Image 1: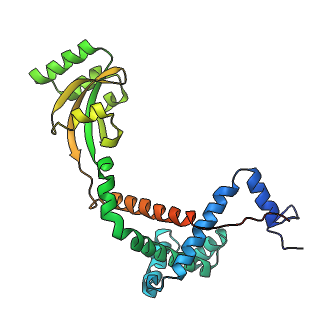
Image 2: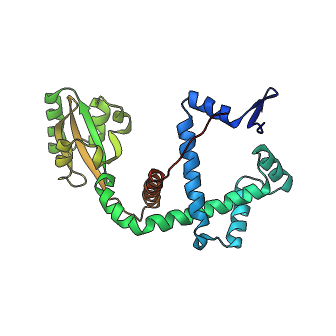
Image 3: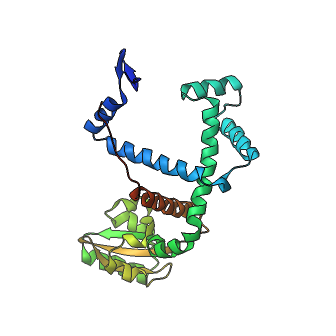
Length: 253
């Protein structure tokens, strides 16, 4: 008899039965996908000696990991390993694998990153907006005229008259990606300059007065954006690899 995959209440559960349970719960396919991803990454890492990591970098990463989690004490670190059902060797291999995967990701995405950024840029550029939202067009016209013809502050009118949640923040919406705007609204707002007030514009059955506070142009100099695009490209590469994998699933006893 095959060794049990799990033992529950002294009753052995074979791997085939565990897979059937996952299938019944609708969780078998996600698990298979995770296994295939790890298989693809493992095979790729094994075939790439150029991804080897200097021992000094690994050891420094181990030190940093332990310091960040207050695990510098050997006993505390051992308890952490045991609570995570992990040997030191497995932990060390996890650190090494993390380094190699990051190097693999960069080697895969770097040649395509600039082109991909330019392709995605129209959807990544954003604008910082403030708005006053109203149900009544005549009131919207009146407030717009007051803003254009007097020293009335936009923030004051937003607090007093706006019907949306932004009123609590003086009308400020924050940064909004251009890709989220309806085309009709985007055309108008993209012709403005910071500080300009436009409106009233019809939005979802109501009327809005907008102030353009700042134009935010996407750039690869932004570390968070660069990391996001690298991850997207790597996921695309991984999915392409998944499409070419041939698998056979056997869950019979």
